[in-house]
Image 1 (cartoon, one colour):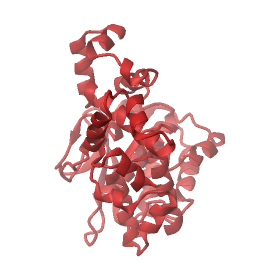
Image 2 (cartoon, one colour):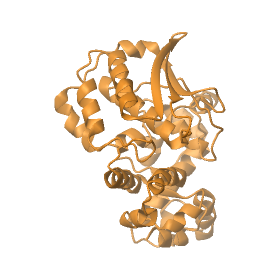
Image 3 (spheres, one colour):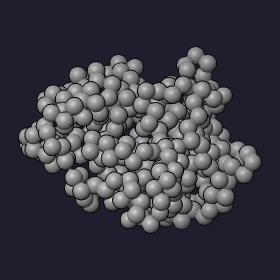
Image 4 (cartoon, helix red, strand yellow):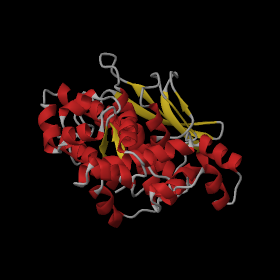
Length: 334
């Protein structure tokens, strides 16, 4: 599993559905080693492993693979049944049609549809229950479930051209660049995502024999950040991961290594919703959180390992990233 981290906003959204069912969220957090006080820090983050454990626990306790986000429970085992159904489709368009019909039968509050517009395929969502407004998390969850399943079925990344949302941009909107794409449109008439309709004719290449492995990693493979191995962002992150932070190249040096100009590299990153300095900060942040959670290294040693000349500089950077200083964050996590 990727060692990325997850914004606390997604943890809070997941727990909201759990609390709405009358369950104790603090007890759930304790089971995965997260302190409830982390929820008070809007910039806090948790490891992908902890978030995956939370997802699975919520689904098990509620017996609901839609995490309490709909008026009706989607009982544990439903997603596996969906996969057994769609994997026998010959093409992606038929698989998507079956998947959306399945969710329409399972959920009461929301339905998805597949349409064609100007060479683009569009998966859009609509509310079916006027007495229960759709939560942001419910809409994001269904879109990601369907998109990730489609990618797996055809064994390739289906590039999202743009994603639109009926709600306004949340404070953690930067997370959406990796969850969906760089072209994000908030405050729109509908929620959905668009991709080239040529993908719809792709054959379903996965076989029933590969389902067991796919389901074993769900729901992490459906909700965690989708890593497009062909994207420039992932290529740069992987290059940086092979080097100690003090040896990370400047943008100019990186452009030279990648046989391109600095302006072209910057423009391509911006098209993916990223900045080079932001990628370095993101990687340092995730490395810091994983070291604080998974090792007994001192805060001073972690700062040094991340390339900070002074521990005070590490403290300032970490507080900017998460809203807490490193020592406080480690105590809260434990």
